[in-house]
Each structure stands twice: as C-alpha cells, then as structure tokens.
Image (cartoon, rainbow, N blue to C red):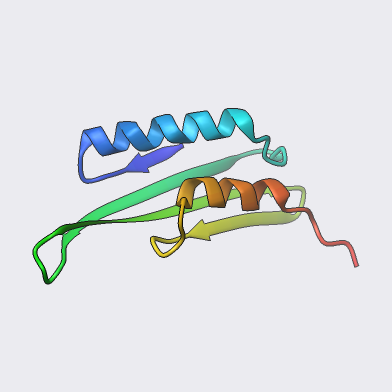
Length: 94
C-alpha cells in the first residue's frame, strides 16, 4: 500500500481509512502480488480555496488475469468505492 499526499497529516488519515476498510472487506486473493496506491494532490481553485484531488488504484493478478480498479476525485468516497468494486470483481469465464 502506498499513500502519496501533499501533507503527512492527510497521508496518515488516508492510510488509517484504508487500513480500516481493508479489514472489513476481503479482496480476491492475489496469486503473487498486488498493490494499492492512493495519490492525492493539492491545488488552488480560481476562488482561492484549497482543493484536494485523489486517485485510488488497486491492481492485482490471479493466474493469467490482471484486475485493476481506478477511482478519481469525481467519485464520492473514493477509497471505499474502489475497495467495494475490487471486492466484487470475478474473472469472466465465457
């Protein structure tokens, strides 16, 4: 798990939330490895207020299937949404 944020406080807050969410959801077990990345960037809006944009990427493989979920700042509850989507993913067998 990697959390990138414009401040250590925000990074700790997001890491705590991820840890909490990961304990309540069980993702499909990766065959060898997987990663979870949270990238947050700060910017200033035209009105002068601070805006935090967050992207969540969850990627893992199982056998020959690679799973990836990405959520962006437009999604409400980005971390929870990405984890919920990842939790529900299954390999498609035609």
